[in-house]
Amino acid sequence: MGTINAERPVGQIVAEQPTRARVFERHGIDYCCGGKIALEAIVRRKGLDLDTVLRELAAVDLAGGLSDETDWTRASLTALADHVETAHHAYLKEELPRLSFLVEKVNRVHGDTHPELSEVHEVFETFRKDMEQHMAKEELILFPICRSLDSGTVKQSHCGSIRNPIRVMEAEHDTAGSGLERIRELTAGFIPPVDACNTYRVMLDGLAGLEADTHTHVHKENKILFPRAVAREDQLAGHVEAAQAA
Image 1 (cartoon, rainbow, N blue to C red):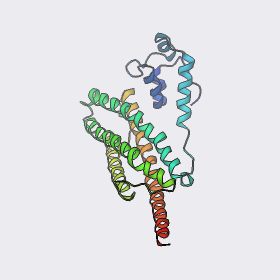
Image 2 (cartoon, one colour):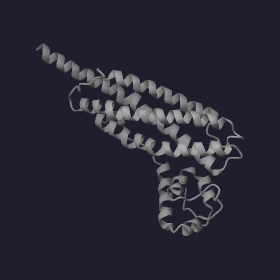
Image 3 (tube, rainbow, N blue to C red):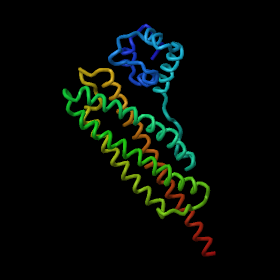
Image 4 (cartoon, rainbow, N blue to C red):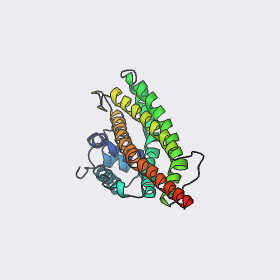
C-alpha cells in the first residue's frame, strides 16, 4: 500500500483499505462522520503517538498481503487443532463482536433506504450465536479427542466414536455456509452501494473477510482434520483389536 500520508483525512485512509478501520476503532478515531479530519490532526487531538498509529496501520496493510502457506496435511492432529483455535477461533472471537456492532449500526442508520440490511442483521446474528456455540463444542469436546488420538490413546467419551461429533460439526458448517451465502446475496457480493458511508463499507469489508476466513477454516476441518482423525481412530482401534486377539 505504500507509506501513509498523515496529512490525509482518516476517511480516505480507510476508504483505500477498509481493514485499517480496526486500528482507528482501537484508538477511538471516528473515520466515518469525522472522516474529513486529517490523521495527524485527530491523533494530536486525542493525545496519541502518530508514529505508533502509523506502525499499526502499516502492520495491518502487511497482514492483508500474507497468506497461510503451511501444508497442514503434514501437521499432527494436535498442531492442526491448535492452529484452528489460535488462528480461526481467535479471529472469530475478536471479529464477531466487532461485526455485530457494525451490522447493527449500519442497519439502524441505513435500514430505511436499504431494507435488505434488516435481514443481513438477522442472518448475521444467527450465524454469530451458532458459531460461538460451535467453537465451544470443538474446544471442549472434539479437539481434546483429536489430541488424545495423536498421543496414541482412544479417549473414552460419551460421544462414542469421533465420527459422531464430527457429523454434528459438519452439519453446523453447512448451516454457517448457508448463512454466509445469504449475506453475500443480500449485499450483492459485498459491493457497497453508491450512498454507502465509510462504516457501511467497513462492515461489508469485514463480512467479506469473515466469509473468506470461514471457508478456509471449514476446509481445514472438513477436508484435513476430520478425515485424519477418523483414520487415526480406526488405526488405533485396529491395534487394540489385534492385541486382544493375540
